Image (cartoon, rainbow, N blue to C red):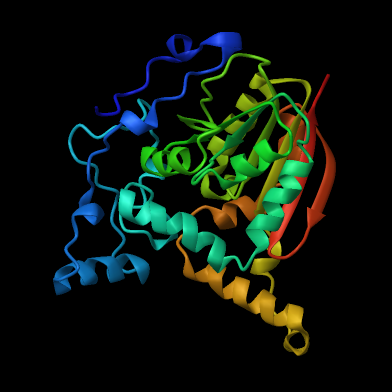
Length: 296
């Protein structure tokens, strides 16, 4: 069966104000143009290299009748990370899930462990922008009773559901969560907010405050602003300097149109404006971390 557009939020809410996850095993997603490439032909390789090299970026193209969220904003329909058709293909979304961790040289697993440790033992936790579900899986292993993974791409979500069947994966947006007021104990974001325009970040934080219970925990991991800092020659004399050079080059290579705007934002001010109190901040390289609590 085809995945049909989600119902309105009140219709989606089930027990305790939680949405019902689709049965991903029974869902057939329409093939997008990258899924139809024939790599016996040079033209197919040329199309892939166009995206990988960041040349002639094009808007995401979805076949007629393809599932999209009812209010999918245009900012999502870009070729993020130089992926052909962005996050909307079965073939390249699978490769992205694996390749991202490889490119980050083990740092993502450490980040997920850090996130999970700060949500340990909670009852109800949502991983926003879950992609392949690996952060949600780490949270589930931290003795969290029930975990959801939310993402706008059904292609990523289907892979996540196949890989992590003990987690509920649902389509949705950070700025329009399909959860009832004060229904969650924690929310995690791992490399998500820097992919969102600032005005939508403000909306997303307001949504997090709405769905979290009083004293609910918000845990965030994002690329470090140190990637933007000039690299001093003396730093290359240390092993950490070569690592910084690698991540600086990587950050400059992949297409992330809103990352500079994210780094310019005053994070404590943003959190406070949404009703959160920052309780821990760590600016490492290549990842920075924040933990905050909703006001009681």
